[in-house]
Amino acid sequence: MAKNVDTVPIEVSILTADFDIKGIVHVSKYTNTNRELTDLLNDRERRFLAVTNAEIFPRTGNQAPRKYNFMEIHMDYVLMVHPSAQAVFKDSGKSQEDITRFRELRLKLNQTRPF
Image (cartoon, rainbow, N blue to C red; front, side, top):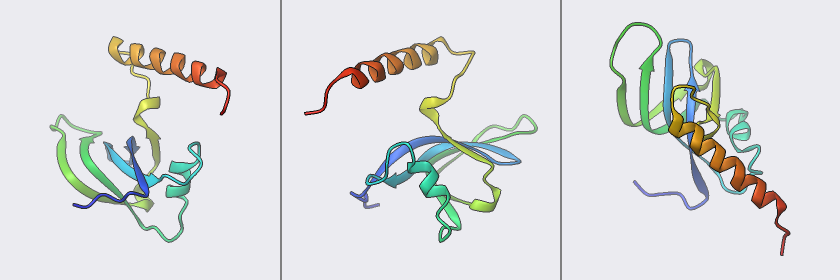
């Protein structure tokens, strides 16, 4: 599969009525970084959201997650999408450490001056 040089991958969590889905979506690298997912989801021409390296977790029952290299989700079924890097998991100390390091790095970057 050829990679598009005009997109960047973002790991996301997608919530539908029946499933939690983790995977990667590709957004335009020319979009404002705070709006990249919003622009992708609000595109009225787009009927499906393409997801790579997807894991589907059923919200009911004790079924094992299913994995797909590629899948498309109809936009009418998407309730919520957010970057996985922003998710907070209470049960994982490692995730909390990663979030703390990310916040420290973001603070340092915000304090630097542009060229």
